[in-house]
Length: 640
Image 1 (cartoon, rainbow, N blue to C red):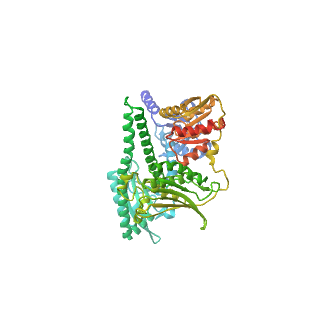
Image 2 (image 1 turned 60 degrees about the horizontal axis):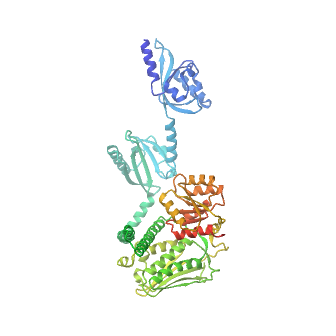
């Protein structure tokens, strides 16, 4: 008998589920190891105590009534009772109980119960219910026999065919669904049980005299359960749209033709892009290998380096065009309206494209519609620059002799007033029937032109989409062989104040005082980029000490510890801590320390983020010696 008791005691203590027993006076008699682990109490602390101390005061009376019923002879079957743990937390258990009788098997002397901790399950269930109640679809749960168990939806219950009280705990065949739906649904349920593969059905229901269409996805909740989750989406709008499309056969055929043409254009674009990218890559890789020849003359060396640089610039233009069209394609491109001088912008473009025009033997003319002082307008400078540079590139590409002219005029005779910008050339011209097609992505008027003049066929599509972002429009006047004139019309809005160099340029005026030696901190996680910047800085006529931080956190610590740091080149995309956060912290510590953002992301939005973080200027990768020199000159020589 003693051995049996020891065996029984070991069985209780080494069980993985909490077990407790109490007598008719509600005194705890058994409290196993599993219960100790969950509650934090030891058996020595609880044996002999009234069981009620295990329950929170708010629920104690209600729970003790259940305890009294159990000791009176009632057996618990998965009854939910929370236990108050020693550390003050509450764990919820599902309990099963049994009564222990005296030797005559007539009187109950104690009750024993075992519990399953469902605290984590309850929390997950609560979280899942929050998720399910936030989705726009109807979500049902049915068991393997087809009985509705639960329903979740954030949508109005008025959108349901039947209210939940009419179908919960009922079989889907017995709640009034049409026979056609029951047949479809039964087939999907049977297939799901057999294959365990998610089933999808489309069906319609007549509701308040209108036909509604639905899509239902049936999925087993897990491989060991017959319970099924049914997610139902109202597809009425989509279905009606499809039906309307079916009725318009002619339009549908046109759409198919356009889709086929678009596919062909994209295929041609891929082939063209492969050629365009490989051409500069061939120049870069090929002439880079030739640089290893020890017998190269200085003249040959210079020639090869020039070819590599030109090829790199050509490749960069291709990549920028692809990135720009990708950003526009997301339909999330933002417009940043600022006060600018349009004359300054056009003059900058003129200085760049005049060199290119002379190389082709062309004259480049600029016509300004306002004086420099009057030429302030409100627009997105970056997008306007992109528009005009693409139009000028296009004019250069297709003009072999004659001239290119660009400029603008103000149209105040219409309301609201507009500014009309034009780019005119004496090039090959465009056939009238092709003048709409040239603005489509990946298109050029003639396929053979892509090989003769190069390009991806993206320039004019970038122009058109950028113009539309500025609430403008673009048109073209041209005849084959007689040149072309592109007109860009955007709203003419004048600025109220003359802070027209913008927030970015104003911030760059924080110059560093002249001194014998300067300390520059380069924050850059890529070692190669750091070495490149350090090498460029060594070319400048400044006595520099360069420090290196590999991430933003390290940069913050170095700026705190070293007050001799005069200038920071801050990469914005880094591990551990990015440049935006690092800049904000450093500016709180040293508000007058100049910080220049340097990043591979050159969008207007990226610049705005950098300036908002506290950066004084912005430089885009790849960084050239000339560009870096201009930046350092602003800070190191402006007041020297």
